[in-house]
Image 1 (spheres, helix red, strand yellow):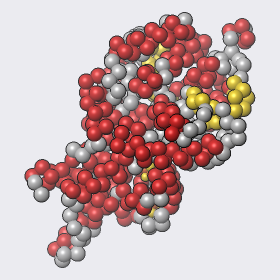
Image 2: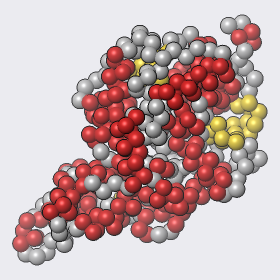
Image 3: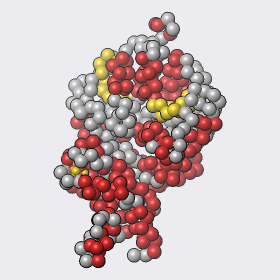
Image 4: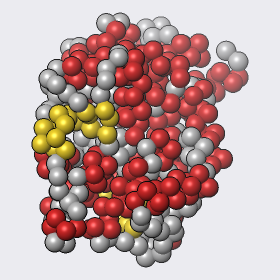
Length: 426
Ligand code: SF4
Ligand code: SF4
C-alpha cells in the first residue's frame, strides 16, 4: 500500500466507531432488510442487500475493534485488513445503491439503523477521499455559489421576478424582521419556480410576512449526501447565520426530503447549539394555516390523484397525516397507492443517487417499484410529489417507463385550489 492509500484506509477505520459496532454485534442475519431494499428487489442481485453494502466496515470492525481483536490478530484468526482496492470496489455500492431511505431500518427486528450505518460508512469514504465524481462536482459548485447546481443569487432574483409578474405579488428579499424565511432546493428554483409564486399567493392570503435571503436561499445539503460532516455544517451555517441576521422567527424547510432532516433533526446537533428560530416544514405550515382557516379551499381539483411519500419527509420526518389532510381537502379524487405511508418505496434517487450520473441505470431500475404502485391506481391522472428531487426522478422515470401522468408539487396544488377572496368573504 502507498502512504496515501494507508491514510485513506486509516481515515475509514476512524469512522468505524461504537455506534457502527453495535450494528455488527446485533445483526442476526435474518435477511428482512434485503426484502425491504428497492435496489435488491428490483435487481435480485445479492450485492444490493443492505448488509452486504456494509461488508468492509464490518471486516474493519472485526479485525481492529471487536472484543479480543488484538488476541485474534496475534493468533492469526482475525479477518484480513481492509485495503484501498476493496474500498474502491465497494464505493459504487455505498453511493449508487443506497437512497438512505431507511426502509431497511424500519423493518429490522433488531432495531438496527442500517441506513444510519451506511451514512457512517459514507463518512469514512468522504474522509478517505473516495466520493463519486457527480457528488464531488456538486460539492465544488456549493463552494463557489452555495448551490449544488450552481444557482447564483442573480439567477434566483430572475426567477423571483418572473413569479412576481405571474402572480402579481411582490416577494421581499432580505426583509429584516419577517416572521418566516423560506429556503428552496436548486431543483425547485430552476426546475419548478412556480413554487415561489405559490408561496407568495398562499402567504399573502394567510397574512404572513416572509422573505428569501439573497445569501442563503439553498436548502440542499450535499455534505449530508456525501457523508462529510464538516461540509454539512458549513452549508447549514450559511442558513443559520442569514436567518439569525434577518431576525426571522421561523425558517421554512421546502419540499425537499433530505434538507428537512439536515436542518430540523440533525441541524442543532451539527451546530452544537439551539437555533434562534424554529424550523417548520412547508407541508406542516400549510396544514396549520389550512386548519386555522387562513388558506381556505375553493374549487377542488377533480383529477384522480395519488401521493408519493418522500422518505425523509414521511418515514424519517414524521409528516404522515399533514399532506393527506391537505390532499383530501384539495382533491375530489385523491386515492392512495398500494404501500403508501411510512413503508412507501423511495423514488430511487434519494441519498445523492440522482446527483450521481454513474447510478442512472440503477436509479431507473429502482423506479420500477414506483411504476408498479402507480399502475395499481385505476384511471390515475396525476401524482403529487412533494420533493423537488423526487419530482425530477419521477420525470425521468415516467419517461423511461412510458407512463403519461402529470406531476405536481403540493404547495402548487394548494395554491391552485385556494378559494378566491370573494368565495369566502375573506
Ligand atoms: S434486518 Fe437487521 S438483523 Fe436482519 S439481516 Fe438486516 S440488519 Fe441483520
Ligand atoms: S437505506 Fe434504503 S436504499 Fe439504502 S440499503 Fe436501506 S433500504 Fe436499501
